[in-house]
Every structure is written in C-alpha cells, then in structure tokens.
Image (cartoon, rainbow, N blue to C red; front, side, top):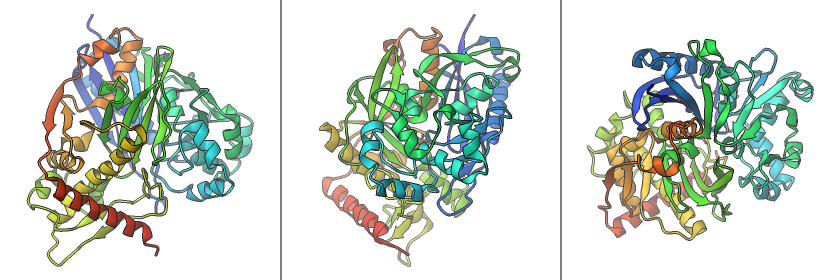
Amino acid sequence: MKKYIMALDAGTTSVRAMIFDENGSIVQTSQKEFKQYFPNPGWVEQDANEIWASILAVIADALSTSEIEPQKIAGIGITNQRETAVVWDRHTGHPIYHAIVWQSRQTADICKKLKDKGYDQMVRSKTGLLIDAYFSGTKVKWILDHVDGAREKAANGELLFGTIDTWLIWKLSGGRVHVTDYTNASRTLMFNIYDLKWDGELLDMLGVPAKMLPEVHASSEVYGKTISYHFFGEEVPIAGIAGDQQSALFGQACYDAGMVKNTYGTGCFMLMNTGEKAVHSKNGLLTTIAWGLEGEITYALEGSIFVAGSAIQWLRDGLRMLKTSPESENYAVRVKSTDGVYLVPAFVGLGTPYWDSDARGAMFGLTRGTTKEHFIRAALESLAYQTKDVVNAMEEDSGIKLKTLRADGGASLNNFLMQFQSDILGVPVERPTNNETTALGAAYLAGLAVGVWKDRSEIATIWKRGKIFHVQMGVEKRNTLYSGWKKAVEATRAFKP
Ligand code: G3P
C-alpha cells in the first residue's frame, strides 16, 4: 500500500495540512488563516482554540480533497511558530488566556526587571538566548501574574504550558500526550540546551512550576497517536516535531556544519548548522538546538528578524496598498529604485543584531515625488537589508564567509526580493524547487520515525535546486545603499516620542 506523510504547519498567521508522498512531493495542501489580536500597541495574541479548530478543518479538507484514505497516512509531523505560549487547564482543556505570540512585546517590562536584577549572563550561558519578550518564559510568567487564581492552580498542577506543537499534540491525542521536542524547548528561556533539561534556576527566576511543563523528546520519534475521532477513525502516529525554522533547516537538507538557510515568512530567520558544537555569539545571534535525532543533538546559530512578510501583510491589510502580497513584486519593479526611501519595519522592536524592544517602525527619505511603488519597494528591500545585518553578525561569529544563501518561505517566491537580496549580500541566492521546506522538514522527521525514509542521506538526494539569483549590483552601489539603511536604523532607534 502506498504510504503518505502529513505535515501540520502551524504558522503565525495560518495553519496548513500538507500531504507528501514517498518522493517528498506535495500531493495536497489545505490552508486556513486565523485571527490576530492586537489588544495594545506592540501586543500580539491569538485564540489557541481557533488554531485548533483550524487544524481540524485543514486536516479534513486535505484528506477529502486528495481522496487519500486516512489509513494511508503513515505518520504526522508537526511544525510550528515557535515561542508562542499557551497555558490551559488540564481538566477542561480550555486555555486560560489567549496565546501570547512570539512577536508580542507585552512582557518587555518583565524582561527589563530581570535584566536589572542581573540575570542576563546566567540566562545566556544556559539557554543560548538573551532576556527578551520574544521567548516563551516571560509570556508564561505574564499569564500566571495576570489571570486570577492562575498561580495557585499552576502550583496545584492544574495548568499545563505548551508551545503550539505541544498544544496541538495534546488536543490531537485527546489530552493523553503532553510533549515537545528539543527545538521548541530551546526557545522557551526555561530549558538548558547543554544538559537538555528544564532548569530549576530559570524556573525560579520566572516563577513557573515544573509541573506545567511538557516532556522534552527528540525531533523524530513516535510520541503518541491521534484519537480516532480527530482523524476519521484512525489512530495515526504523531512522529515528528520541530519549530518551523529548524524544520526549514532540515527540509533544506542543511545537514552539514556551516550550511545556512533563510526563511522569509512572517518574520525572517537565518539558521546556520554548527554541528555538535554550540557556538556562542558576540554579535546578537542566538545559540539554539537545530534538532535532536538518533541520540545526538545538532546546534545552530540563529539570526531572528521579527518583521518580514508581515511588513507586506501590513501594506495589504493595514495600509490597503495591495490586494495580495505577491502583487508587491509588480509594484516594486515599476520603479528603478526607492529614490532614497527606507522603511525600518521595527513594528515590534528589533531582533538580531540590535535587540531593541523599544524601537518602533519608521520611514525615511520621503519627498513629494514618493509614490506607492517606492513605498512598496522600500518594504521589500527592508527584508534584504535586515538579512544583510544578520549575515554580517553570522560571518563575524562563525568566522565563515557566506558563499551562497538557501532561501525559502512565502516571500522567497518574490523574484525582485531574491535578486535584491543577492545584490545586497554580494553572493548568489538559491531557491529550491520545493519552496515548502518548513512543512517538508516536519514530514521528513516523521517519515524517518515511521520508516518511510531510511536516513538523512536518502533525504538529501530529494533536495533540488530551483533557481539561482546571481549578483548583478556593483560593490559601490551596494555599499551606498546599505550605509543608508544603517543610518535609517540608527535614526529609528534614536527616536523617542
Ligand atoms: O520564532 C518565530 C518563528 O518560528 C515564526 O515563524 O514562519 O511564522 O515567520 P514564521
């Protein structure tokens, strides 16, 4: 019987169910966007129940439209927006507060207090992260601090915490399985990435009881099964978990130390596989777990950009300049340059290398001649400039000069952006034929656990280069444009209303 793998990709703005065949080819995709809540400036929240309902809807849709019988699904791989924190009641299954999204800045004050108390060094040395509202730990603390009775319930073991992978697996398994994997745990600010355990000192710092936390597992193994009524009568093994950025690294077949990918999604995340070595950054990169597989841990260096595709979404939904995000390419190429216009999309602060929670978005260089086209082009270019900031940090920390960049994610389909990216970096950018590397990574992890694929070398042969964007811009122009960006960032950071 032909076997398939289903990847559930629970992203920041939408969820998807994708069915892959044994060749790693996509057979069916079903996608559903869900609502974002912005209750205060800089806050971003979601309804975890809506995410769950959307997952059920896309599973049903993918199965029925592909006409693949559920018993042919050999395993499910989960990949997810990372850091987003959900706290729910273990008896009722109800979240006690909205999910606080990775982009949300509502815990910036908590972070400031922790830094003032001098916790930074301890956090960095255990987690590879830094104290920032981005990571889950302070989000959990915020929920426990703000929801009536939550602290007491948590202490009594009545509440559970999870990132979105954990929440979905708990729901899919009918509340039987409370797990996460090393990649997701490594983003919580509560997990020691060296001794691979939840860390008592970090939990004390945040006031989070260990009872709330999921068991941490490898990224590829059978964690449990779906309960049959969530999967059309079948108990399907849930066999792979990885945070979406690590999953994309896996799906891009970056299996050797030194290999790098950049995913242009809601945010933009560049990961370099550093092998069994956890490299410490002096330039604002994060040290994180790439995956735990076959009893071994692989580490990565990561540059995190908070706003990338969501800047284009903002042009579409907030400013109503676009009907669809892909349209941005047509507008951008209608002008030869931005004519000196820069957008710094620091809508939720700035990540690597600046780590500035207080910065907010800004636009520079506007003239009476500035048009919508310049504006849209500046938004797209901001993704490439932010990526250049990260590459600079990565080259310094690793001592490795980037030779090519493997790109993926929704906005990597934008040819203008990929060409500009190559021009600003001064290296070729490669886009694989299968751009859906995040979901593919999760499918591979699950497929390895249930025997659809034998090992990584078999998978590496499936990866196919699609298009290469070669450098077309001269050095002088590149330097001039980039120095304008640096000035725009500094001015953005200096602005205090
Ligand atoms: O760390 C946040 C990241 O996992 C979100 O990914 O694809 O939604 O930009 P994405």
